[in-house]
Image (cartoon, rainbow, N blue to C red):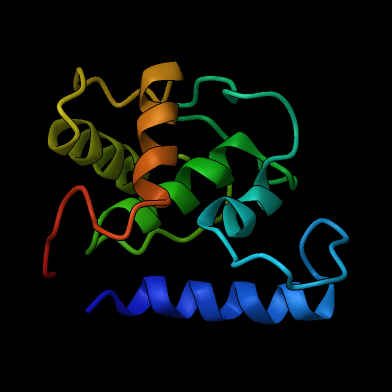
Length: 131
């Protein structure tokens, strides 16, 4: 079972009920993963390309959004969402790209962003890894 997905959806429900996501005051719609990770990005889509060495610890941050989406798209990584795209984030991005059938380069650019968004909102993981 996807324990972290369930925990995220429960947290999103609580945030929606308390008005904690983007100023929403009602829970009329089911929470989405975009709603949870959306707190890390609030401007145009797709976000700018991020890769190893990218650092943006302010919120909203494309780096934080990438880390959030990577956590929700695959099992096993549990990246810290800290805005620092280091070696662990790079490894997770490369693993995601490989599982999603994308070009494996570690850069979270337009194609990877779109695939991450899809898989973060999917009921399944693109990759399963029991660490």
